[in-house]
Amino acid sequence: MQISFSKHGNVTVMHVVGEVDSSNYTEVIVRAQAVYDDGSRNLLLDLGKVPYVSSAGLMAFHTIARIFAGHSIQGKEGSRPVFRSINPKEDASARERFKLLNPQAPVEQVLDVIGLKQFFEIHTDLDTGVKSFA
Image (tube, rainbow, N blue to C red; front, side, top):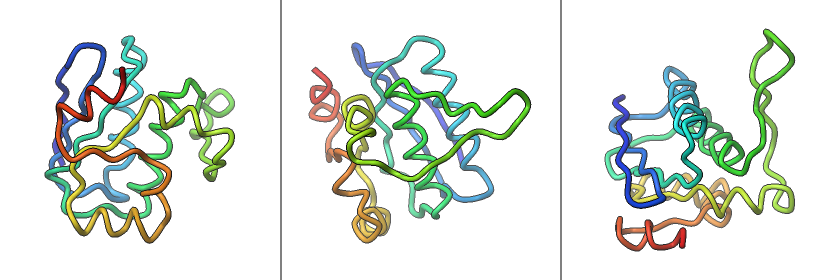
């Protein structure tokens, strides 16, 4: 898996290439946390070159959404990060700061089956995705 970033006004686009699964989902979270820590507050996750997302990858997406909503995922000092299930009321602000771009058909199907397609805002072109943060 490869991760790169581009900046479009006040939106950071996180470009991921390759599968997102249990072998690398923490890297996705860590890299997103790093751009948040550097001041980015709007993240568009480009999934156009991601052919597969496991349940760990889906958890990573939710965790990133919580990061960009300003929620800490850090556990007690020295412990593992805190993950929890989606709460539509508490996590509504997460949808304003984290959106998905171009999920491939198999990934979009998984998002739909799990119910995340209704939770995350999904865009099919970069310009529309970037403008949706305004």
